[in-house]
Amino acid sequence: MVKIEVSTATRKHINDSHKEYIEQTSLPKLEAMIKGKRMTKKRKLLMSLFGDMPENRKSSLINYCLSAELKDIVDKFNNTFLMIYGFEFSDLEKHGATIEAIRKELNFIFNYVGFNVGTKLGNGEKWNRHEFITSLGIKVCPYCNRQYITSYEGESDNRKTTADADHYYPKVEYPILQMNIFNLIPSCGVCNSRMKGTKNKKHLYPYEDPSDSLIFKIPLEVGERVSEIIIDTKSIERAEASVEVFKLNKVYQAHLDEVSEVKKYIEEYFEFGDKVYEATHGLSVPFDIFSIWFSFMGKNISSEPLIKLRQDIFKQLKEEHKK
Image (cartoon, rainbow, N blue to C red; front, side, top):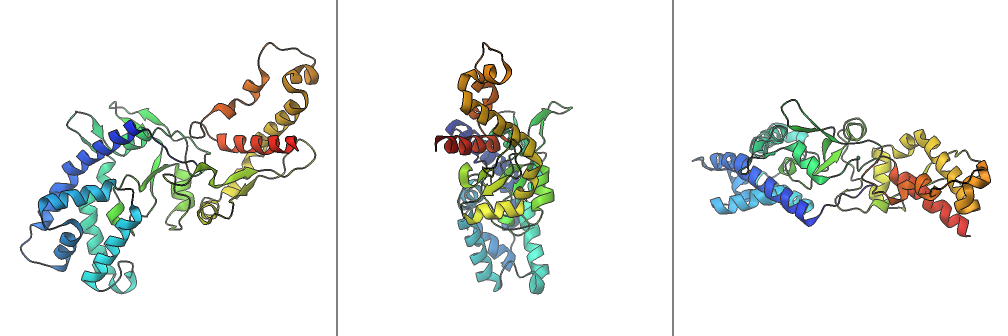
């Protein structure tokens, strides 16, 4: 519900840092595993996925970690695995031991757990999960827009973040994508751990889906108090999945007070304009009421919690006022 957008310069910084990190950490492990003498199915799988020559393996490894074409990577992995082993990677019931062994090998190569600590790059700066999330510049959870995900200075002067990194394609089922930067979504702990958990339903994808894929609305009713916050998914399948997975239609009912206040201010402002304070309080004020009451209209929805909610309600009631 909040699209993650970064500048060209920021994207280059992230790509360059992540590429160097993968070259330092994952590439040596991959090469060590490929150099086995026996052509086992496991080794054949790795060579089919990454390539026969060192330069090809390096290129493939970087692609798996930096490419935005996640579905293409998943399809290649699944098709290659099926061709070599003769069964689906998801067939845990019959082939759980074999699948777990392959998952263990990929976890060793990519080592997402190690990304929590990270490593120093050639420029002396550290690259890890915290630096990656901080570099994206998003301050609120893109899944719910209700919680801050900010960074702070740790005891050893390392930046930490309050955000989780959700794997859009779960790393247990898609270990080939565990270190792909377009599969890592900064999110709050509530959305990632408590709401989504191990669910694999394809909800809104913050690197691609626009922020208006779902819209907040309120019933047009008499009185200042808003009785319900409605979420319009515009019949978009992934938007409907987001509402279901993150329980947005339920958790947002906790914000009726905020929306009721916005409604009250909007109705008063559209009735009296800039003289609203004089009309409602008998006072003439020297400041711009609009910029104070509706300051959220000039803010990026990724900068503060609930900005999208307030903006959507403002737009809805403004359109109703025009009728």
